[in-house]
Image (tube, rainbow, N blue to C red; front, side, top):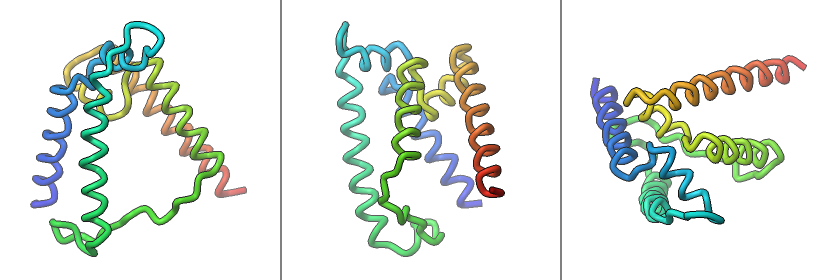
Length: 141
């Protein structure tokens, strides 16, 4: 039960942060990405703050074997950069640039009833399904 409440609280704080920062607004995100036009640098400050929090959180997490809720820590083990990682990052960036959403803000905007977000989330789920089919076929081969 404590895991469910902690997850709910973390999700609410994350979603609220996305709304307050403007990251759930695709026009604001696209304004940030439009460096040749009317560039809006405000999201750079949001991202910088998130990166700083992440750096501290990962530094603390690396020193622990159990989470604050008592679960075993599962940190990424690989630091290998390969073609799949680079292509995935490029696909993510192109999708972000086209839609103005990434997964978290897309779900927040969907919860707020945005039609664009519904299309984005449907495309995201379809992409995850296609990836899963491809991965299963790769594993069989």
